[in-house]
Image (cartoon, rainbow, N blue to C red; front, side):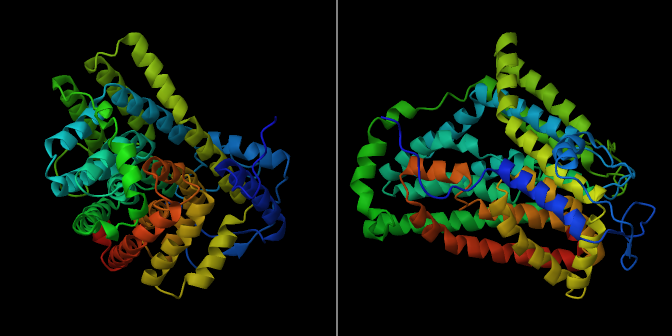
Length: 495
């Protein structure tokens, strides 16, 4: 018998959403008046100089289908229009997409050595019997993974082991899920150098990935501490009185399911080779951070490299090869693992190109400045603090529509970064607002595969997870509002 088709509405993929958005923007070029701002020598819009210009409506078939391709290559419209400020030409998404592919290969080779698994396994073993300390350390480790390279799908390998350890310690399965999902999730929403969030957004905002680093580190430290306190408080409450567990009704079933055969989930040994790999892994990100910091502007006599995505790509390609050699993967295996890792990121790379097509249509249709002008009129009088916090709230529903952090950054930053200039807000605050809202939503986003996959592995119902995590999300929302507001008054803190 043929399988019955699933009934009911299924939310479309990010690709479908973005292509529909391209069609809507094409239609908008026929309806929205064309206009432009006068620009500074640096290519930024000058507030109050908006004026209408002859329209240049786009075509759904010819221009709409070519938009992702033109966005990838950075091809201008026939009239020479551009869709991104701070650039003499429309720069394409090809450099960012190539960077994403190479990062995928770099991460795959690192994972293939077993170094990351071994490190987390070592922590789990060393702190058996001291679970409160282990909760804190594991959440910090996962947060570092999230903030550095957007650790998400990679966490799925750890749920079984960590849940088993937590249940054996007298906690429940929800604690194990929270350690992994909240640890990595808080790291992602406080991304310091995450190339898929901060890197892409900063690139399309025309700023360095180091801009806003101080505020993001502050959010990372305080947010992770809040998450650790939240999880440990719940864990201790459950240990004292198991009936307080949100999953108490499945307590015995969980013990049978997770503790049976938990010994089979042993992690690789953290030997000297894997320790060296972890050092090299960390060094790659430290070099990237060093390369973008304007040391001369800070009055520090260190070499100023002024690297960008081309150099970043070469950096991680080189470290991928080096880690593969140190990890003794062999020439053939290095090549295969790298290509497979890049293949896993192909969807992200394509989303960036498709999302860039939206900017191409808006730019060539000459409606970018009109949208900015409307926003200037609407939000120009609310003040910087209200502006950045309203923007932060706006990104929450946008993140639901486009769960891909890279796609959301590519679509929104060409509009929001110049709007920040008009509102008198530093562009790095816009990047921070985007990534924190996107990351916060992805703690419960049902369209985000990592959330649903992690809950399935932990046998946690979605409604129970939302009930559990909502108080922490509200607290984190307040934290971001405070940091963003301070950033408006003390722009130096956003460096």
